[in-house]
Image (cartoon, rainbow, N blue to C red):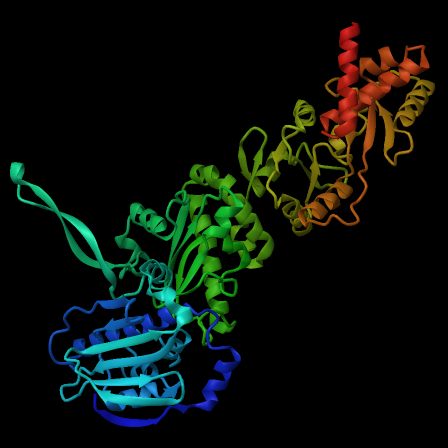
Length: 626
């Protein structure tokens, strides 16, 4: 080809230095997203000009093509957009960080939907190519086709081209370390990741399709090849919620996260003032930590995938949600991989939090039974938000539920009214008895229920923090685990139960069990309990137990607090006041006391290892000798 011009690429140093500091792009594969985005921009501009009557002729097929050629070691990104004149090629391709997108936006900002704003996307091509050619023809009638060529330095060449159709081919002569981008599977993977929802069809090769011809007995099927379009150009979040049904949202969730369990419910985000934001957030049914790690919220900017690391936009407690957020108003740095915090981001964060809270309250008010059915799946998420965000706490507070051991649900206010007459301590605080291990606490729960008290389940991983937060924020409540030594209703001496042991017998029993416990720090108390209680009951200090659980939750194995508890000897139980007290052999008496103590420890799952083996062995020997 005849050389028309030769020159030097101008680098705009004012804009290039920040780019250099950020190393331009954090991942090599980003080049494909950037070049496809440029192709989409060029096509969107063409549609805008056509709609304005500025561009003559028919638009025709606007599909963007990705064409790998293993033999030539080239990868071509082809669009049928507005193309470039020779002057435009010099102006826009030779000046790094000088973008035609901004100029076009300034002129057609009411109509155009342009992705790129930085003028850097094109130069990502040199991350994978030793040489880049741009074969282009402008839509303008008098324009001549040209080829712009550069081998990765600051020199360029422009040639006449043989091109006859409007648009641009970006031809990448791939370097040896980028040959992977000639594999269709690898390209399909990247296009699915970054370009899955771009508004212009993107074709990667051809695929086979079976069609039926004829009717009745003459009906036949045959395979034909059709363009392999890899993207959904009109994703669900761009549609009006009024036009969508539940099955549409479920189908889109499956498109985002194939083979995942259906979500519980969802929120459609759609706002255009004071910022532009669309998207759909799903409340998932979490089965494991793997589900949380696998399915993340995806951030898009004008349907271009940016990242699934959205912690600067979405509060941490909302990271449990799945779905899509799309906003051109979220500021991105040159790599489009990291987010910068500014006023717009804070507004968007507040809006998303409000929408989630509003949705939860709406579900609670409109269909409480359905809300209660979902509570086991959404309770942890709501409590996490309740602890993390004051505004969220204020909004969802009335929708927080407590579930008692009978399976009934109550709001905090409802539960206060239910128990305040019967479960108020001497300081006037409402005592909420709870269990976080229902099976282990069965005997304690039954004892509480027998006395007319109510017990709630608090068995979610975050409940320890939640309890303390409620106690601090709502001073009228105090939470006491059903086996706690401060669960006054269960262990304090009931004045209606007479003491059957004499003072000397009480002292003797006390000393006996102190001998059994040996030098431990644990306390022994002898007192009459109700007939439903066990002969020996172990209760743990509420404060120390909470501190230990907090340590375990935080993974703090260092400096673990020693296990402390109180051993209560029920002097009202016949095994104590009839059998134990009347034994004459001191060795047998101590052995029996140890047996009762082991039973109490067994009920608390505190008897393990060698001690559990000993206990089982001794009882098997007793059975054999009886």
